[in-house]
Length: 115
Image (tube, rainbow, N blue to C red; front, side, top):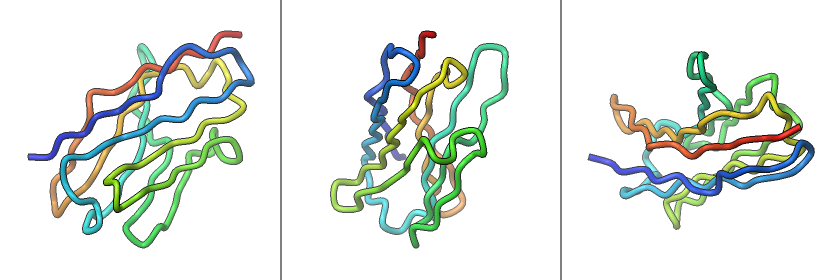
């Protein structure tokens, strides 16, 4: 079993920044990939950013140029730097890790962007 704990969410004005962190209970060196997803009320969960073990990175079109995903294998953490936040970014953000054939999720952290 793998535990993921997200932190760093909060209330911010449009144009502001937040940095989300995800701490894992196991080594992430061998993970097939890690990522951030979000789910707004009444909407499906969507991919925000992913990063592979070879540091291949992918972003949703809506966040390209504003968000940056990174990982620290030593600390077993993954981060999401979010700049130029927009009200449309309001959602609960979830950390995800794939180990072998299994995917694990955290409980999420709420991000609310006011206009």
